Length: 224
Image (cartoon, rainbow, N blue to C red; front, side):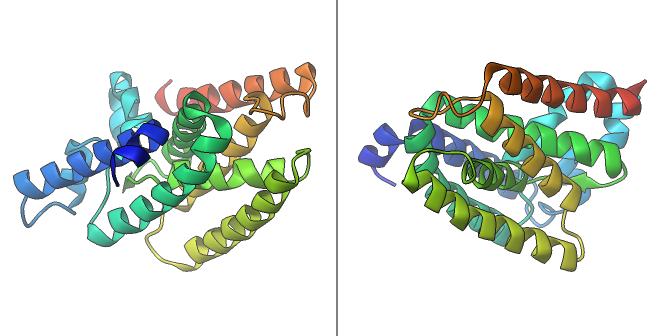
């Protein structure tokens, strides 16, 4: 990346920068044990039982987005973020792109907390699946031919990655599915440039309320 990229895609640059700072810090401070469950947990990974016992750790709905398990994990996700960021930060705008990214990740981690509380998990895949799903949703309603074609491509990527995850042991499928649900809902209640009128205000409010109820409901069931 260069200065031109960073200036044009500041949120993508910040996400990649923070992700790599955390990852390299893990390698330096936990050399030889950076991929253990204990290290992932200590650096902010999702672990539902910890939140159940101490609800003040709800910040773990966010931090796992920036924590990765091994070099292959971070390299694959970094490539996805790099290319997705170039397309979607420019399309959504920086602020809305950051909302899509974070809210998708939160929903993914909330579903992980709800369904797999005994698993330590981490990674940007929750957010990446949300970005896939947001464009897949817009593919059916957007006025822009570019968005419809892009959405068709992302629909394929979403399905391929979901199937791959289901067939691969050790993959956090709950987080992926949750991220996709979050991204699809975000596509309804967060209007993007040039497509502000494709959903009625009623549908936007319903999607937002659904998002909030799902996240709060899944968390509440676990901690109350």
